[in-house]
Length: 635
Image 1 (cartoon, rainbow, N blue to C red):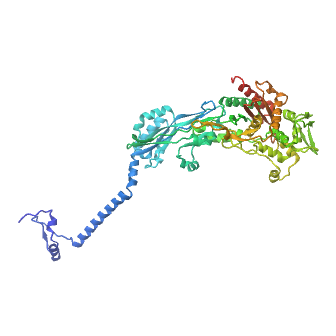
Image 2 (image 1 turned 120 degrees about the horizontal axis):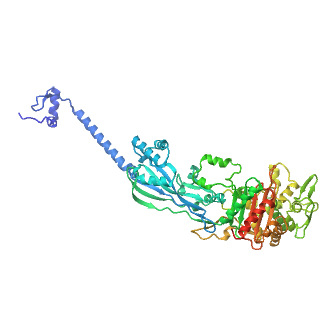
Image 3 (image 1 turned 180 degrees about the horizontal axis):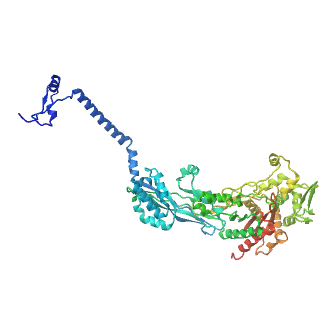
């Protein structure tokens, strides 16, 4: 008998009918000569079921493969490619800001930051702990803090997480040496803003800060990403769109540890545009220095302001608000404790008083009232009033600053010696003489751009305030009295102005009657210079003959009036002193506003020392000190 292959079962049962018959009859089936008798229990129905199961599994697997290939293939390919290709953002250098003589006021210095990519970190905890220890040793950061960052980050994320953004150059060098052996660790070198400090520039330049969620929502369409820095104040905010530039990108192929092996593509960043300002840095420094000395001498509140304009075009030559702050502190990422300290400071150093502070102008407002009276024809150069020390109406007395008065004065003498009685007459009238009244005073004050922002290219400018009868009735529930008009006519009461507004109308008087919008931007280096017409507001809103009378009155202030100490300057100057009363028992504000040279004005300067006392005593010396330097040897 031929010996059968014991494993050739299929042959033994190939004939299904015979096999079925044997099973139905209960026969046994012999496999060759193995001597073993096997009883089989496989039926056709079970075979068919097995075939169906096999077919189902086949079609399920085939369908799943088709789904993954045709419907999800691109997604998984992107994920796989993302593990191999990375896009690194290349930060654009921010535009540099220069003064009018091309002296840089800011710089972009290298700043080192350390990041890790969670998806590229070692998977084993022991290796991850060793990595945390290595990082801790290299950057002198607590190991537990690094480990906590590692542990809290999503393990499958490829979004970079910051470890430290305060690395020294030595630490950065050490990291660059070992970076290739630190899986998932990335050293970043980006430019950081550095500002010139100690020159009263902080309120002008402003500062940068990391974009917050609200800003990111608004700026996302402009290419901003989380972690980007954006202008928060000053020119950095106002000209953000010019300064920011456009980030580039670099696509690199990385290994399993996230380390770059090959650059696939690169788009270079486009630096921001450089700005040339109208500012004279040396003048800015001199004003800040002189104001600081005046604050000490006056024993005032500790705050002072100076604004210098070019009367011929509205250029801001200097803008000082003291106290100021260190904007480098903000650029480096100010902590909450330090920021709260700034906020708690009673002098509020973050507040830009030159454009946002509002004050009663005192006698510096008298040229505006005089111009209104001349323009309305209620006085001329020949009109005089007798000053005997003040005016009495019923039980109220409105005094002159000089006991016994100034005698009989016209408009030039009234401006030169700041005679209150003269302005009581022309403002509110007295006896048979009818003055301007509140509505006309307000009308001409508005013509000189009071009560509205000047439009300077800085954020946060205040409008000031011009009171009237309707406002007082609505707010104070009181009618308007003659005393309110008298107070308004000498720059007291409820009127409020900014130092910049006073400098603006002083410049208009200096140039003969043209208002220019104050501005800090002289030119964008990659563009054409900005035309002067862009800053023109209006001219000849006061007749030339009347404006010339006002100019003569301000010149007489220096020649024979309240600012005679300025007569020894190397050029002829003109101006107006002011001593503004404030509520409570606080000392008066000390004002002076003037221009030089008298015939061909090049500069108009407004000085305010908060609670500094008499304008002639404390503000005038600052003007003298600065102009002596400006028109001297600039030593």
